[in-house]
Amino acid sequence: MEKRMTQESDRISELPKHIAEEILSRLPIKQAGRTSVLSRKWRHKWRSIPRLVFDDQCTRKNVYGQPLQNLAKIIDRVLLLHTGPIQTFVLSDKGLSATRDIDHWILRLSEVSIKQIELCIYAPRKYKLPSCLFNCRDLTRLKLYGCSATIPPSFEGFKNLDTLYLERVGLPPNGIEFLISRCPLLKHLTLKNLEGITRVSVEAAHNLESLNVGGAFLDVAFGVRNHLESVTIGFDDIIGSDNANSSNLHKFFQHVPNIQILKIGNYSLKCWAFENVPPTLPRALVHLNYLSTCIDFNSKEQILTVICLIRSSPQLRNAVFQTQNSPKKQQTTGIATMADFWKDHHHQSCCLEQLQVVSMRTIFGTEPELEFMKFLLTSLLNLQKMIIRPNDRTIEVKLLRELVRFRRVSAQAEVIILNPPKSHCKSCY
Image 1 (cartoon, rainbow, N blue to C red):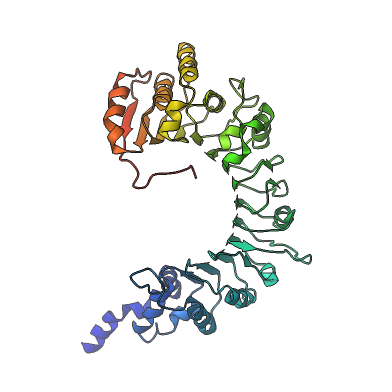
Image 2: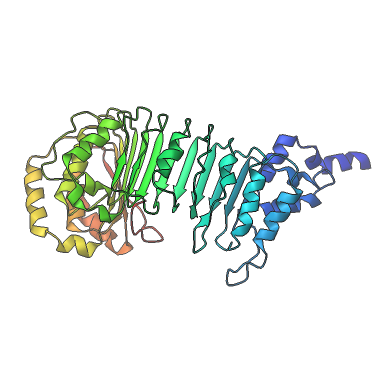
């Protein structure tokens, strides 16, 4: 009887190896180490977990949020005692200042056929990556934040790399293009706020499926990307509307014929918004089904550009629009011009059949925003839902009062007003 009870109470020791590893890999490294007290068989299991994550949860903090333990010593000890293969290594702790130790850790990782590395360094100065990082030839995912690097001439490439994420990273001229050209299987690429880089080419990424670019880029050369399905763009305001022209708009969409998801953040729409926007693109976006854009509702060029994109996308079902400017700027800029624009445009209102769900985010209840919503409600024949998230609770009553007055061409259109976000958004994406 006693033996039977012992067997039933120690079922955790009999768990299959892959299940035990899965449990441990989902725990913070500190909690994984504590599983050694569960049973004799679990005493050393944590030492062979393939996924090592060192983040803010690894060290105890005082009441001021300052670490009470030395993270560098913890990582040193874990790597020293680790006995199995390491597939993933994540370092993302804002309190880490001893960046010199990272060199030794990367050297260790370069010797164990590591698959995924994520280094997020929040020190005042960028961390200079050691050349041995480029010896990790089995990498499938690489994420770098707050680093700088010089790619060695002998670098043969990351032949298995599927995902590359670079943010606040410093590279030499043409370093991005050289790195991309050495990653033949690259499918997912993110480039954000790269120091000193305003122009970049992704033409060498022949298998690219998703692209996310943001920051002070003036130009991104795509080449023809037949596999590219998802694009997120978040340019800074410094690009200015002076760079907007029809060739930007036509060239971009000519190069991404199979795009399905398009997210236009920050001030990116400005580089496509120009005078005399055509009703439709020369070539229809036959696969686009999701559009999200940050928009200045006081800019008729941006509004016409959005309408052009909607008309050019026969499969578009879901669209998200987020306010770009503060209510004060919306209400004091070009009121008469926009009033005349909407007066003329409502008279020539076009019927748009495909859109079914529209989301309006960070709405202040200004006249430009209301006019845009009125246009959508009177133009979208098959609209099912318009979901509105105001920026403040105080404007909910005003929104309801105005929206009730607007005519809807879709008999099934439902207007839903959500609670405001807990924190105010300053920009898109």
